[in-house]
Image (cartoon, rainbow, N blue to C red; front, side, top):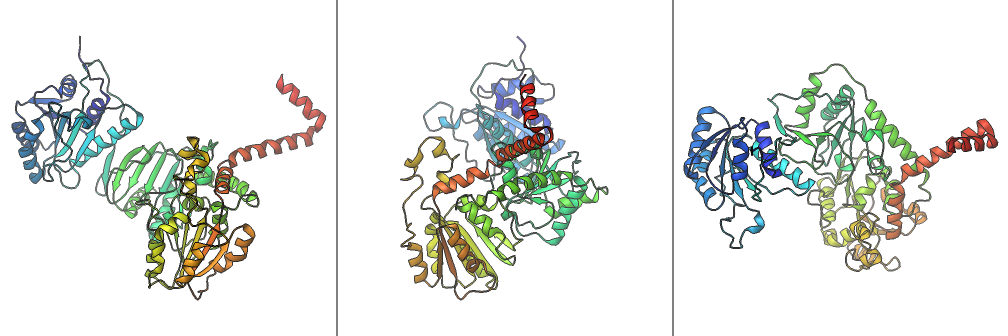
Length: 589
């Protein structure tokens, strides 16, 4: 029987990526746990393999090969104490900055600590032995496969990242005695590009710049992005925490999050990712992603990462703008804008019947917050609601999407307000977030520029919206008692918030319906300074919150129905009711 590659998918992916990244030389030591790996590469003429009985010597041999050849060198060993004997040689490689990839074959981490022979814990190598350690478990799902590819790429790239040095991969085997796979899988190769490196050519037609949480943009960077859009036919997809106030931007929620989402503009060939975490949860599926960030890290939320550009946004756009003179136009932006505009028109038409909810409130406030202001948005329901609508170009919008907790919203907003007390700071959040952090409102430094709006629906409504796990599990109102924590501190007639904030020197206003809200909102949003900081408590119902979101995510269905109805009207006008009925019968035949 002819031997080929092991059928273990994690081994196949690693071998394919070793080849893609140009790692040919391997020093292999004997053992049972690394048979699948060694047998696979010894049947591939691409690899140049050297045998060494003991791992201590193997690691030093790898150092010598790397020193003389200038190439990256891999090591392969079995289980038990074999990997421990790499330590002296890898320590040498660490301090001499030699790119040695130690591939230690192993049973799964689940076996650690159960007195199973030859199982040692390799999860925490000494700090000055390797630059990075990754774990490649067996693959049983698409997510496992994605994770394996990302981590293998990450480990291989780290060999020469900044200063070179050794890296560890712990490769799990299930001891499958099947070497029948003739071809390696197609893998996603991720490369890191530095400013002095060779930049890949942009060949894509439909390009989107996706901006997550980002510091406010300098005018020069905004101009560079606008120029890039015009030269490469790109659109800028943002949320409020992007803090991008330039041209060619679209808030994509109403387009990308429709239940019937079949819009052509969602077909993105290349997405250029700027900034950090986005809390927008947009349903976007690009073909390839280029991440631009000074940290140079492989972060792949869309599972389509192709390049990481370790540089500033300014350097990235300057380089690509300088190599192209011709402008391709902004037709892709037009596609996005026109699709958004159609849906936004439908959304505007239902605002009068949309329930009194976080979404309705966001629509009312988005264009009323003064431009020269700061804005803090609570995570999840509030942030999602605001990202449905564009608003005034404010100075700064922040949401705690880094740790994504509800625990520090007011404190963060207080900090923003203290940094510039001549500028208004608006804080919009839910009741659970408010009560979690209400002690921050007693800070003696708070000034009259602080304004807080609390959407009080009496629970964590995020856990009761239609597509939440609790609702999909059929829990219904039983969610209220513990999962959604219903019933704490809500009483429109005897507000706990009113008593508290007035006792510490805040003004207080409230609303329980659209009429009351419209009567009070001008007080909350006026650009002129108030005598005191103010809290605006707004009472909504979780059922209305769910209904509002459901309507907003079904606009495309309504739009198609409207188009169909309008088409019927036009045809009837041309051929009459009798002619229309005859046409229907003919089509049915």
